[in-house]
Image (cartoon, rainbow, N blue to C red):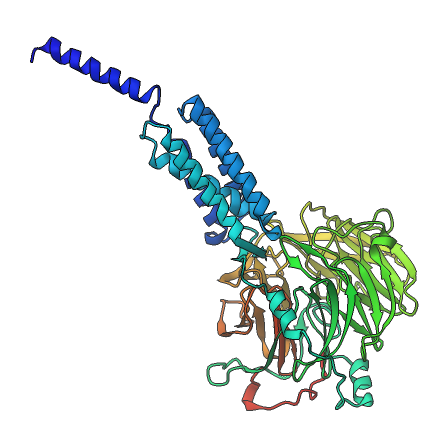
Length: 609
């Protein structure tokens, strides 16, 4: 064949290809490849690295959805697809996304759409375009759209039960699988609440007059227990399960008085205050309020913990229902609505302030405008005694502490720390420390005049000293450390060191300087309780494990652990004597902890708080 004939044949072939494929071109695939890689990196960052700034945590939460949107922009603007393909692809993806939203379970709307629906659908679309980039026909667009529809459609098969603590992953279940709350309601359906006939009135009066654990994180809110020394040898003497029961969702802890446990939980449309028998887990009484609070991150249920004081029980619901009840039978003495008093709707994660009772006042934080921030209601009547200005949101609770020789109510909010006169509400000192995020933790007291303030999401912990001169209080900054950054997972103080969570990893810092002593142990967004007389730290991990650490300032010394309950656990554990009470949003349990030297202890032998 001559050279001229070969050239003529090549031109004929090229012409045939052009006719067959029109102006289809191989797709430019490096942008979707890059975006898929970025999505993977953003997903792994909070799970791999120890010290992740809040901005990067936020990026890991919102970034995958943004990458998905950028994939669609690439397709329309930079993909080299034909105009017909770009229009059909954009329309097909939009229709598939819209149909997915139409059938989506309500729990998946937000943030499920951002974390699951958009990333999975657009990643599937990108994968289709990458695999079929060289197929020079309209079929590649159809394949990519079908893959996107399948990726989006996975969300329709799922149900969300809230987020895990790092705010980058949802707790997902199959849509047709019954929820923990459904199973709990089925368990309690038809069961009658019975009064305990074996509890004498004198015993109950004595328990209520001297409750061992009267409020959130204990009587002083410092999460420390004093009692008989607990043995750390759980290999030879493991904790003994006394009972385990299903409970309704909510993040309340327990108040304990003798053989009585008090907590709050959600049961369908009813927010419940429940009294359980400490020795059996059986219901003694319930009181219901027809209200339900739920949000996508934390799920449904109350957030605050009941408070025992003066033989009464005080509770605050997530929608702002403040009540005084008779702890013997659950009868309501009075109730008031914070939404009406403070003229505001619930904050993003609900009203979370566990009531503080000081003298004739029951004090809570509401975050209303003007002077309706921190409120004090009359213990006897429920009428408003005083109110004080404060930040507009907080998930901390008011705390009574003695600072510079003066009893003060400490209230930490988004604007800083308020130090209030407990009788009048007068502001003795306002320490400004603005933070746009949320504050959840309790201030910790160091010595007679110092306060530790912790702010999560990469900000850190600050130590301030309070002094008094001519009747006025002043604050001095001592140090600020990013070595301890708890947000809603807390910390405790022992022998001039703080032990707590730096993000999701446990750590110890020196209170003299704020410098780190050690860091280690991935317990998630859990909680910690100081067993003072045992020299131990009891950690309830985010996944329901109970872990024992020595209060060792040289290194992390983990001595024992076991799986106590199943499911996401953010609630604070309680230890009274040798009994551990622990719960989360799906179950509660009681364990007998081994004592040193094999000692035994009756449920009522220890009255220390």
